[in-house]
Length: 396
Image (cartoon, rainbow, N blue to C red):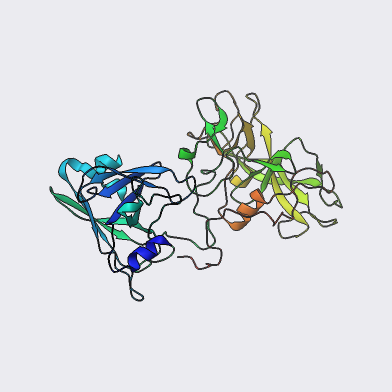
């Protein structure tokens, strides 16, 4: 409260000092406006939060104008002017001028006597309320000076929200790019992802692992939001009835795409999970059934088949990654799974919908029937890192 008493006096017995902090993301730069006018030496002031660390503010030839306050209309846009002599400000900040766009710029104001070497030094420090801005653009630049225009973080004038192009109900995050795991192609294994390697908001693990009630499971899915389960589970040929939670298969007559590009008729299977006891035959239109896919462990001596209806193309797991064949490969040694080429593509793909997100993060284990795989009902208590706007339904 002492600074309020100071400004209410007829005369202030100590000069006003403006200090500036530039948040560069990995570090913070501390600057003063040419030092104190009577001195070009650095000054020290404490952080406003515990443990009230002492910071040294280096004197730089900068000037900030336009801190106007208005009760209506648009927010003020102050101008930060920096001497361009030998790029002094960019050198002090450790980056170039263009890279400063979007960085947070904070102004701290106090009286000379409340600096660390003053009689009023205290923890917490005595100061006026902080003002924080974002460096919005380079307003002007010449050999003598550089001018930046600052904007309030909540200044929405002329800004359309959201600021990115969106498609109704579709998540824009890069799949798994903010997750804790990343695939090391050189070592053919999943390793920890560093914070600097993370991007976007999808924190689903790249190895598709999820922990449910203390147990770790693998949850593979494709772009059609179909679970891809191990071939080692029991898949019974459907005859006349089915039990909830069990898995079944039916014959599918398909057209195979051979390794040389020619086509031939081949029978394969549809795979299904029974969601409620039924005597109805499996069908996509029947709510008692859910279509699933299966994956096998890669073997160099085993062929994997691709079809004109690529939803039936075989899935395999190799070195911990899920792959889907593009066309039939008869020789596993010659056609090893890899992202480039004519035979394979990555098989674990997000459908970019709310359902895609929920099937992963809210997955529950199937406790009916065979007691394997994932249940139809999901754990809605778990929040989703969905980056889209499900309320937007129109698409262009």
